[in-house]
Length: 74
Image (tube, rainbow, N blue to C red; front, side):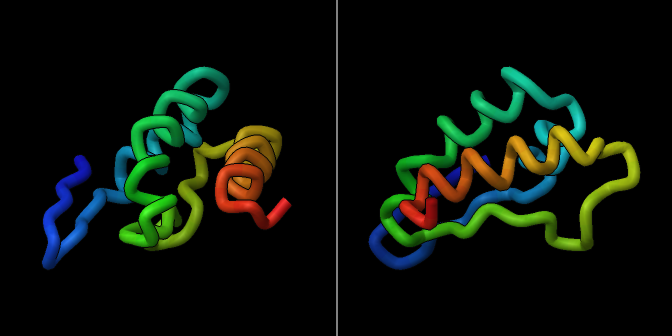
C-alpha cells in the first residue's frame, strides 16, 4: 500500500517481500507500483525484518538488480 501527501509518504514492505518470494512478474509489478514513490525519494524498498526464508537467491538477485536499475545505482 502506498500513500502520498505533501507531509508524509508511507509504503508497506510486506507486499514487496511477498513479491520477491513469488518472483518473476510479481517483482516487476511491485517495483512498477512503487516506482513513483521511490523516484520521489519517499520510500526505499527493503525487507524490513530480513529476507524471508521462502525467497530464493535468484529471485532476490533479480529484485536487487531491478531496484538498482530503477534508482540509478546500476
